[in-house]
Length: 154
Ligand code: HEC
Image (cartoon, rainbow, N blue to C red):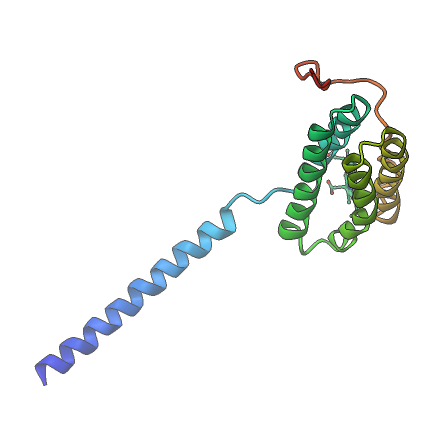
């Protein structure tokens, strides 16, 4: 009798402890860092620019890396910004990213430039669709990362 009462009390106290722990974890999850849409887009902007300079310098390895980074940031948006309607449109980047990738694999500068222009148009297409048409991206004309060498040294 004594033992079963003891076991029951023990169980209740374990439950309370568990519930407290869940509360703490819930607060931690709610307060944990989550990359914002605009924040990720700033990162997309960086990789978009770097991709251009890597490509026109025929630094194909770096160009491939930048495509990979772009894809990764787009995945981050899909993962952490699920509740935003705009996130449903992220996959519209896939076909143009694939054609940029294809040009890079074949080391074709002309088709790289062509598909990069199309990629940039797709960025603006989404900005247009998401009522963010005043944010226009373009092919960069100046290399703003003075601390990085985009050329491939032999
Ligand atoms: C799925 C639609 C979509 C696609 C595709 C997209 N964007 Fe965006 N972009 C947005 C939205 C929505 C915002 C506004 C985010 C916010 O709420 O802060 C934005 C914001 C931006 C910003 C402003 C960031 C800032 O805070 O200054 C830049 C720059 C940008 N995008 C660049 C690009 C580039 C470059 C591409 C293509 C490689 C691209 N975007 C593709 C939807 C998109």
